Length: 243
Ligand code: SAH
Image 1 (spheres, helix red, strand yellow):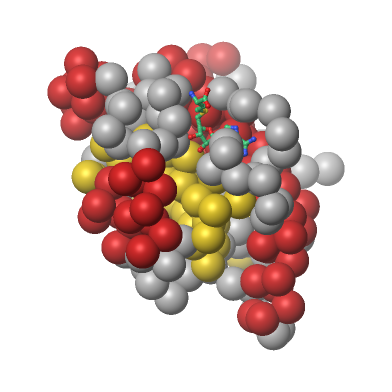
Image 2 (cartoon, rainbow, N blue to C red):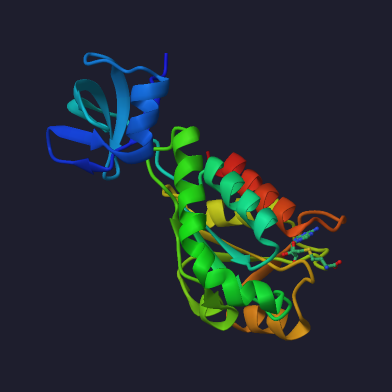
C-alpha cells in the first residue's frame, strides 16, 4: 500500500510540518489524527512519517525512516511560451512524467502579449508543478526556471544530449536519437534536453541557431502535434526508453 505523500513546508532532521492549505486539507478534509502515517518529502528525501501533533492549522510529523526516493528523469524541457492554459497543462503532464526541469523560453513566434505576462506567471507554473508532483507521488518537484530568451537557452548545457523537436524533420526520430544517446552514455543515464516550439513553430533562423549550437533535430512522426502534445509525447518516449 503506498502511503499518501505530502511535501513538507518546514523540516529538520527528525520532524517535519505542513502549514497553510495542505495542513487545512489534512485536518479538515482527511480528519488526520496523531498516529496517522504518511510519506513526507522533506528536502529531496522521502520519509515514512507519523503525525505527532496538530495545532491550529499546522500538522507536525515525526520522521521515522527514509523511503527509497525515485529520482527524476535527467530530462530538461525547454518550452517556448505558448497559450498559457495549454502550457500549464504541458507543465503538469511533464511533471507527472518525471522531468527534472522546465525552462520557459521566448521564441520568435511566441505571442507578444503572452511573452509580456510570462514573467508574472512563473510562480503559478511553479505551484502547478508542485501540485502535480504531489499528486503523482514524486519525491521531488521539477525546477521551473525563469523565462529566458531562446538564444540563451540554446547555448546552455553543452554537455547534455540536446534534441530539437522539429515538425519538419523527417530522417531522425526522437526514439532513434535517445537510443543512440543511451548507447554512447555507458552505464549512467545521459542528461537530455528537448526544445518545443510555439504554436507557430520554429523560424528558419531559430532552427539554424539550434543547429549551430549542436542541437539535433528529431521527429515525433509525420503528423503536426500541438506544442503541448509534443511536450508530453516527447517526455513519455524518453521516459519509456530511460526507465
Ligand atoms: N505551426 C507549425 C507547427 C508547430 S507545433 C506547423 O503547422 O507546422 C509546435 C511545436 O511542437 C513544434 O515547433 C515542435 O517543437 C513540436 N512538434 C509538433 N509536431 C512535431 C513532430 N511531428 N515532430 C517533432 N516535433 C513536433
